[in-house]
Structure formats: C-alpha cells, structure tokens
Image 1 (cartoon, rainbow over the protein chains, first blue to last red):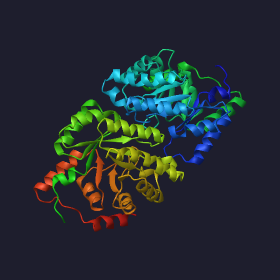
Image 2: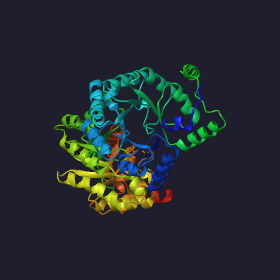
Image 3: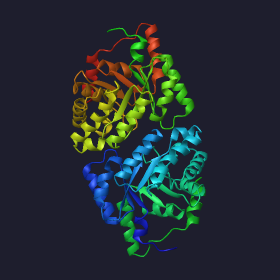
Image 4: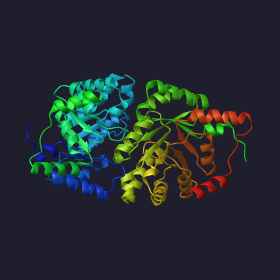
Amino acid sequence: MKRLTVFDIAEMIDHSLLRPTLTNEEFQQGIELARKYKMATCCVAPYDVERAYKGLNGSGVLVSTVIDFPHGSNMTAAKVYEAQLAMDNGASSLDMVLAISRLVSGEYEYVEQDIHQVVECAHARDISVKVIFENCFLTKEMIVKACELTEKAGADYVKTSTGYGGGGATLADCYLMRQSTSEKVAVKAAGGIRTLDDVLAYRAIGTKMIGTRASAAILDEAEKRYKDGSLSEVDPSEVIAKINTEE
Amino acid sequence: MKRLTVFDIAEMIDHSLLRPTLTNEEFQQGIELARKYKMATCCVAPYDVERAYKGLNGSGVLVSTVIDFPHGSNMTAAKVYEAQLAMDNGASSLDMVLAISRLVSGEYEYVEQDIHQVVECAHARDISVKVIFENCFLTKEMIVKACELTEKAGADYVKTSTGYGGGGATLADCYLMRQSTSEKVAVKAAGGIRTLDDVLAYRAIGTKMIGTRASAAILDEAEKRYKDGSLSEVDPSEVIAKINTEE
C-alpha cells in the first residue's frame, strides 16, 4: 500500500476544542498542539473563533467553528447570523448542524433550504460548509436522504456527528455517506475517533476529514510509524469486508 | 401542611419539548398535553416557537424557548439575535445558557455582560430570562458565583440544567441557588425530574418552576391525590434534613 507522511494524517485533522467546559488554559494548549503538528484546523466554539484566529496566525492552521451546535434546532436566520459572525472573526470552515427534527419528520424542503441559506452566505466568502447529521439519531434511510439534501443544498461536506449526541462516527455510516454523495461532496467523520488505526480505516473508505480530540496521540503514533517505515494506507477492501461482517 | 390544587402544580411546569429528534407528531401531542393540564409554558426549540404560539393560542399556556442551547458558547451578539427572533415569534420567556467556559475560567465580567445583554433586550419587551448554569459541570463555588453574576445581570431566574449535559437538577443545588440569590430571582429546576414527589420536594425549598418531560405523569398523580385529599405541601425542614444527610 502507498506510503504516507505524518502531514498526510495531520492535514486530515480538525482538532476539536468544543467541550463546553474548556478552560482558557486548555484552549491555549489546544492551539499550541495544532500549531506543532500543523493540523488542518482547530474546531472551536463560536466565542473562541477570534482568539483562535489570532493564536494560529502564521501557522498555516485554519480556524473552523460550529453553527447551531449541537442540536440544530435554531431558526435558519439565526444559523445564517452565527455564520456571518464566525466568518467576520476569521473562521474558514463552518460545521453546521442540520434541522434534525425536521429531517425525522420528513420536512425535506425545510432541511434543504436551512442548509442552503448557510451555504449561500458562506460560499459568497469562499468559506466551506460541513453539514453535521448526528447519525446516532437517524436510520440508514434518513442518512441517505440527508446526503441527498446536503448535496442539493450545495454544501461541501457531510459529517457524521457532533460528538455530543450519545453516539459518534462509524465506518459503516461513513461508507454509506461516501456512496450516497457525488465526488463534489467530501465526508468528515467525528465522534469517538481515538487512534491512528481508526483514522487509516476511515481514510481507506474515502473519508477526507476527521474531527477528534485525540489528535496528539494519533499524530505521535503516525510519527513513530513513519520513522520505522510502517506508515501506509490501508487496503479499502479489508475495511469494507469488516463493515460487511459487522452489519 | 397547606393543601394544594392541581393547578398549583401545573402552573409550576414548563413542559419540555426540546429533544432534538422530536417529530411533528410528538410536538403536537406535547402542545395538546400542555393545553389539557394548563401548564405554565411549553418550552420548545427556537424553530418551534411560532407554531407553538399558534397551537397554544387561547389556552393561557405561554411559550418559552431556549437561547444558545445547550452549550452556551455562542457570541453574545448571536444570543441577543436568537432572543429577538424568539420574541418576534411569540416567546414569553427565554431560557439562556450562560457562557460556561468563561465561567470556569474565571472571566466573570464576560459572563455577566453576556447575560445582561440578553436580559436588556428581553426586559425591553417585558419578557423574562432564565439563566441555565449546567450545574453538573460546576463546583459549588462556581454555582454560587453564577448566582451572583446572574442577579447582577438582572435576570429573573437561575436554572439548574439543560437536561443534555449528563446531569440534572439536585435538591442540594436548588437549595444552594435559593440561598445564593435574593427574592428578586426565582429558581427553576430541570433535568431528571420525573415524579410529583420530586416536584413537591423542590417546591418546599423555594423552587418556583420545574422543567420536565414527565408532566403528564406528575399531573395525573396530582389529580389522584387531590381527589383523595392528600395533595399537600411538603415540610421544608424534612427536605433540608435529607439534603444535609446526603451531603
């Protein structure tokens, strides 16, 4: 299998700093960690966007944030307003939660428009939008429907979970999301991803980004394997076989 | 002890319809339940305020909603904007989550201002504000500090929990909150309150409002006891003795 560099892993990681009780000290440690490993982004709470932007200045690490997190039950106008504030303060990517209640009630037009209005204001400023489904609350059919609506709404990513709904990412869900969207839409897995082997398995089935708090452990392991020559891609067919066995 | 009516209990209850996966059908059932028992309010998600307002029209039951729920980590401007939208759509009471990370980091001026700005825009329209602390994340000292900041910020209630933080109301916390605020501030308990005996115990120690999903069970039991003449207040000293034993 193809050899990987540590940066191949680091650039997949949105380092999550979303815990509602995060202290200022933990926030600073997170920023320094992201700088050290050159991760893709720090994913911070809306009121931390401005200081994350300053703290990451010159590092190449971008700031991402969350919109209507983690319930997704705000009015669309509030989601758009949150998005504007976040972009004003330096966010380069927005992880919005879709209107979960509306999705489970079959109000598809509502769900699509809700996403679309955030996408429209973000794309006007060249900012990408990831749409969080909170899969633990959804059936497989609802996940497929959410993929369809997200793509129609023009968003850039489908994302599995908030990490606060009681369940996180699964390989089976990510594989389903990859198969239910065109190549215009990328997949982000988040919630419960703790090891490099997790990351490599998600990568093998076409997952582009990983949201995790365990970034340091993952990247330390990547460095270790890189040094001993064992940091390589995983065979997708092995992961798919494992998914099929478990289903 | 003083006899109570069923309405004495019903008017304490904010019937919670906040589950992020609530279907349209469950929403309708909740509205009908609140009408039937004449509860104080239905506490609904922001995007449900308008339809709750219409559904409760003429019933005497008011609409309450949540602001920056359940993490409290939005910018103050976003909280104010959410509050304005909710009031425009018919909300009579706003349950806002305070800036938890800022509180645990000792940024008290920030916490107070964040609350105050929501209070200012709500009071301009005669709308009350309840401030949710999420006690399960806080020490006793932080709860006392949050009471002080909430009162200084001019809010109307201190509230224990969102119900989504992993821990709910406790009698000990509510007693502490009652003792840490003046009579200008009322106490609301929410999270894990399931029985009439719970409600009576909270009431005995000065808790004014209860947020619960178990409203029907609580009020059915109240009717039963009212009919057999046993619906009465509980002796506060018994509840306080129980709290002291458990601490």
